[in-house]
Length: 342
Image (cartoon, rainbow, N blue to C red; front, side):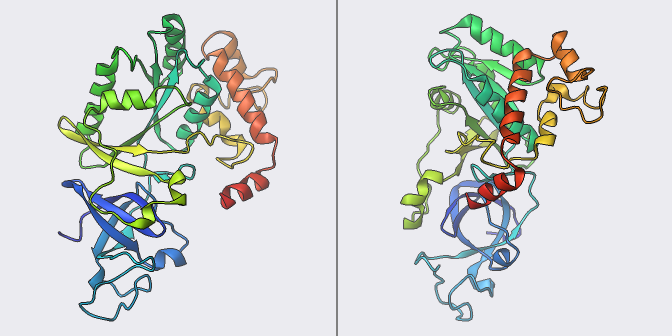
């Protein structure tokens, strides 16, 4: 294998990482990271684009007995390690909860019924994605159970500027359009690792949709097997799976943890930046009567004016207020400290 190619970290626990490459997606390379990353306070993360080298070529303190030529290298966890991550490419974005780098698309799934649609959780997902420059795609599921509510939700988010699909994972309605979208963005990758994750409340139907869109999806582990990827850490384990879709490959993230949307506890971003997470506010920010307008209830607020005339959906503005107040209820320094402990 040429050592100057860029691969992607697909999973990692306890200091061990698996890396895959675009032209051999089914093969995993078991790696350790160079010790220099610890000194620079950089933690390799699933989704990172990396360069790896044979362990025999690297003189590094992250391997035992690095000066012993020709001897099999072992990690401090006892696993054989033949490769070392020598470079981590610049990240496009990184999420802390769940830990995931360079995510391109977040498919936010909301049910039209059973359970009742939770638009506040949906808006929290869109805000976090917008802040991280991740493209959000809204998937309204279970349209067969409540057509009127499904159409209502689709209208809200289409008006807000999101690509929106109305589907039924149960009957298959609309799945072909969602599948075509995934196929299109994967085939136009231009050599990139195009990645995406599905998120939503429990019972939204994420698994059913993924099974329908990716019928060949296999969520089993790859060729590398080692004990450190099992046990108590797995509840926070994130993994990327390469799924072939027509002419391209889509890197699907299995991401437990998107339910951690507590804006009072975690420091996702300063609350002053929250308005920029609502894309339909963008054209009106800076046009309010007061320079430090919070867009909550001020006179002469350009955003509120657009809510009144129907340009901005009322539910979106109401959820903006709820998220703003949730963030502001706890000082940022305290939220930041909590985030660091997580």
